[in-house]
Amino acid sequence: MALKSLLESVYGDTAPDEYRRMFESQYSDRPGTTILKKGMEIHNPKESDHTGDRKAYLDYPWIKYWQAFTKNNNNKLQCACCGKNIYVDENTAECQKEVEEYNRGKDKKEEQISAEKLKAVGAHLYINGKDASSGYYIVPMCKDHNGKPSYETMTIADYVTAVEECQASLKK
Image (cartoon, rainbow, N blue to C red; front, side, top):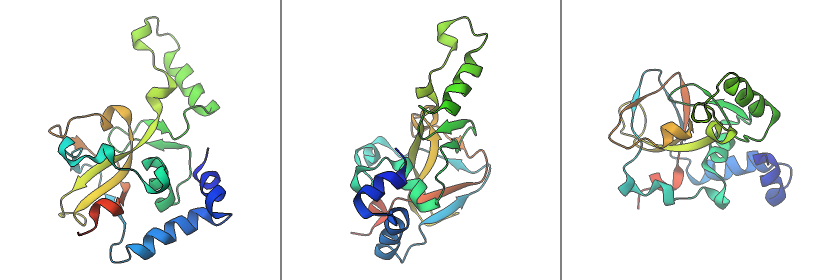
């Protein structure tokens, strides 16, 4: 289900803008988004940061949170690290077609992929103030890269819009 449909059920027709405005008004002292430069090195947060336990507003998936802030409601996105196509809804015909094309000619089951492998996630990154405000940010990522341990360095594939995770960046 698209973010717009989900939010409309709660807020009415202006849901995505209202959702974004709500966060912008609450956290107006922070710009909220930053552009990560191609070739920038990043790390997943440490497990001790408990980013996997945190939830976006109304328990929406983090990828929907990213879409609301960036106004990018495309189903097909690119992984921030490897640039491969990933899908917010992997059950679409477009995603299924990509899976079929990839698997064509692959005889061994272990070489084939499923649509789940192309599922987009809103991945947490910690940026340490050099190129952006320090804090936790959300970017679209494939499950493979999102699952990398924090000690492994990853590189941004192309320019990517990162959205600050407001609740984790608030000063206590």
